[in-house]
Amino acid sequence: MWAIVKNSQLIEISNGNKPITVGDVVHPKDIFKHWTKAQLKDIGVYEFISGSTPDNKFETQGAISYAVDDDAGTVTETIAKNSKNINDVSEVDENGDPLLDEYGDQIVTKGLKTIYKEQINQQATGLLAPTDWMVVRKAEDSSKSIPSAVTTYRASVRTEADKILQAISDCDTLDKLKALFVTEYNEDGSIETKATMDTLPDDKDIKDYKR
Image (cartoon, rainbow, N blue to C red; front, side, top):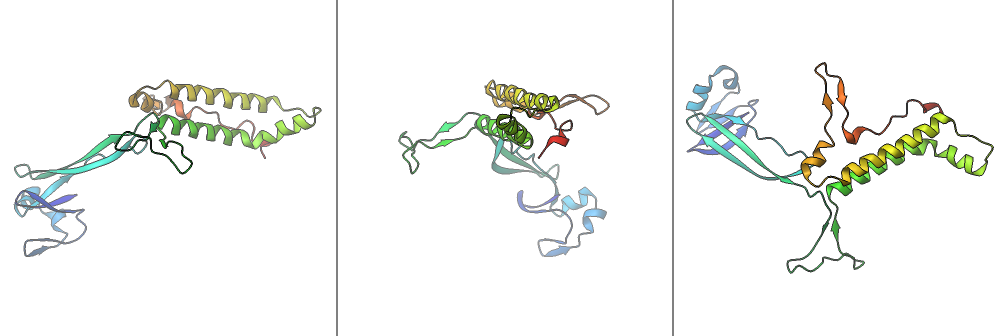
């Protein structure tokens, strides 16, 4: 990426795949391949250093700013990041009074802990649903058995989901919540420790029983 600069001000950002106009001169896109950085700098084309973008799972994007360094011939982008709330927020107006919905209940904005708990519950429900028919059949006809592979799997889903939900509840900082999403790897690329959020069991052993 490149930045067109005039009087120490950023004028335009270019990815170098089309001609650019500097002053009254139109330069072909080939200059980005064949000119040196010094030559580009002389006409006001600086190296553009992109800023890191927010992690949408945990942050929202704030203001974007650009720092022009005429000596180095660079423009550095900085993207502000705002951390999302981990806890639910009861919304109030400018006077501190509760903001109410159409039913008269206070509006509550869900925090990350609530959002990710709901996701885990949805995942667990989705994993159990294909074998729910066996549980219903057993309840209606006690002579029908549920294979041990299925009961073991269903118990594992519930147990692991409870562990993840508790781990989320125990997070009192955003960094602790972020840690639940981190998978640790060995030097050979194999998984050493799976991320807590990814520990729900798979259904490979009960595929023949799914409906």
